[in-house]
Image 1 (cartoon, rainbow, N blue to C red):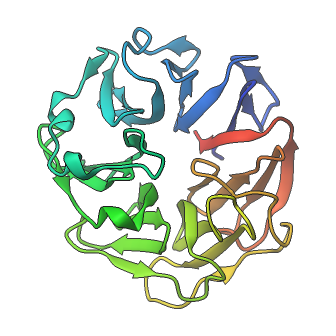
Image 2: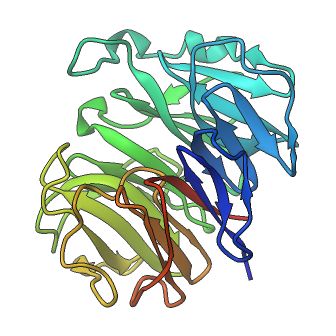
Length: 286
């Protein structure tokens, strides 16, 4: 059974044995066994992966080629352990159109990789870019105004993006997208995960997280979203944020600002509380 890791502002917690690493240090993002710590360094198997990041603060991490790819604020990528900035991404097509509602430079928000090696980079606000040549070149793939908050790839290569207008789905590696919102009480989506043959997505009415809930629908075959509620509160006091909804096979987990961690072994059909502590910043199965 996969081990569930919980990142908080006070360290990295392992649910299966109760062990805490990086005590007192904020964990910003998790991916597999990688932990992005204080936005500056990546922790793996009890040691640091390369030197601290000499770049803008890291926001997300992706295992890649035995090392890691780190996304940063102001829209950059850094490869570890070498610590080299990915120059091709700094020249990515469409970069001049990236924006934020508050006027700051857009950040890299999430990263994902497909089974064929395609890399997907979610820029907020800048859509989803892909690279099919290990980062040598980049291509925009969807309307940046959809306001993407997370991109993930299912084991079969289906690409999914949680957007401000619902779920964007691509079955052709980002060549085209369909936006799905049937059954949702609100469409502002912050997190998405694939549990077996089921898509799980957190939505609320907007950035403030009002009426936040988690919904599920089949990965393929259509049908509306349905709210998953067995073992969960009717709505959450704040959104289930990006990085706080994850899956591995039929296992799924979600974490909240209130510090509760819920686990499902039936692809989000029902849930049970498995941990409580500091506010959750990120989760991962490893």
